[in-house]
Image 1 (cartoon, rainbow, N blue to C red):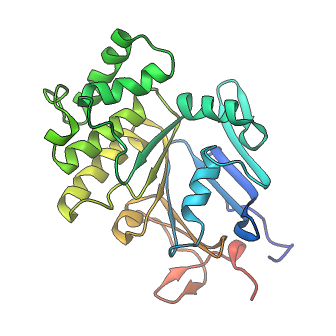
Image 2: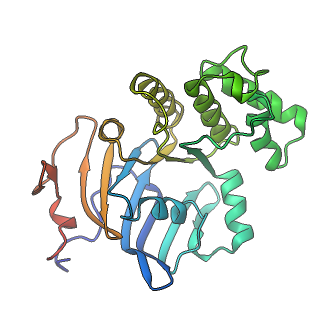
Length: 264
């Protein structure tokens, strides 16, 4: 990267979560090789790239699921900046319970529990008594169009309804950042659109930051920004959602902003 260029893209708002020169290795394999990325409150960020590019590893490092081998991950909270990279497993677990929400492709819901119990479980793991947890879970289900379905087990719901339960579970603890890993990957196109509408409304629509890992161009296009990974590096970034274009292009019309062009 040209040292005369800024090492970060211009941000319209202060990042709620940011990473600098992030490195993650698995043995002799480098999965992330100096990644810089940031997301602001109320912003959605799509992370794209081919299989093996480092997308899911980046999500796991940002969310404190995996420890990092180099670089910084910083979360802005009401109590000040938290260096996620400096925390041990106990500290990262607390962040995952209290500050972060998660939506996965398979939902990862407990089939033996009802929809209400699945959502309440997340609050109970954070220390809320069952009655309080269920009182918090119920309005989350209702806001996601699941009123009257709280007593159904997951197998009694459609795929789209189950994924809305997963979104409600991600939100019940009041996180500032929600991570979604292929959240519509197991759904048909119409259901995918409905679930994505619900996810965006429940996250960026309420001032939360959303980080989405996806292979789906249609999902990426609905986000505010997209970063594209290859071989563990950010090789391009572009605004989405109808905002302006950056300079330079990759094959297929993927813009490459000048600050992030990678030397050959």
